Image (tube, rainbow, N blue to C red):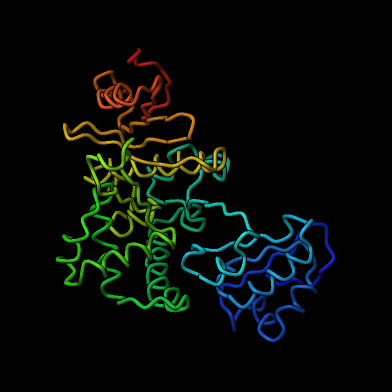
Length: 346
């Protein structure tokens, strides 16, 4: 998006997606500080991590205007942990907010809750708004190739494209399961350390969600491995070869897909309302498990996720066990139906 008029009511917005080719990025390459000052004090930089030379300059500008807040909005598809120049240059000068691909408050009008999961489109804008199944499949294939072959090298991340694609496929088939690095490494023919590094890369690029187990006393944790979910259901379905809604309706991954979708929505909404909230799952040696446990500091809120539309009290057995063990007064069973009702007291 070109910015020919610098004096406007709203902030300027620039897309830095392709440095050297993008008309927005090119002016920054010669004299980035002059370009920033030219654009004024209200600026949105999209895919800002692609131009790391900006961050030391931004630090100086922010320090000179220390009493003014909110002038710059930096958008990006990579965690500051990956782009070290961000975390090192802007430490103490930025506030961070994670936005998941599919977030309820950003759904277009007319799209019902759960449409993203049930249609298989996911939450990325283009496939979400694309009605044609073949065009959506083509978009996900192009996205996957671009991510592995261009985006990772552009971030200075050295990985094997073949291993990364295979790992992505294995994670999709194990979506919602416990992470077993040794098993994954053996299947891929790489080391335990390599597969853990690849997982961390996917996590810091917001493509997978790692959900740790909860325990009051970490030393007595019954389950040590986290659960792994692909962050976007559309990408999950594309990797699994689910290209049309009827195929999803009969696919064995449908339940885990719905579970991951709901968990992502809840975590996203809590992240906006209670940034200090932390997400876990709960499991005992006896096999009782609750899909999501939000720790708000002053209280804990458990959620069990069921795909069918009219769950009964028996479906809440693990939820009741969790509430009893952790002395929680209220828990929630999230289902795919449209009715809200009580399942009784624990």
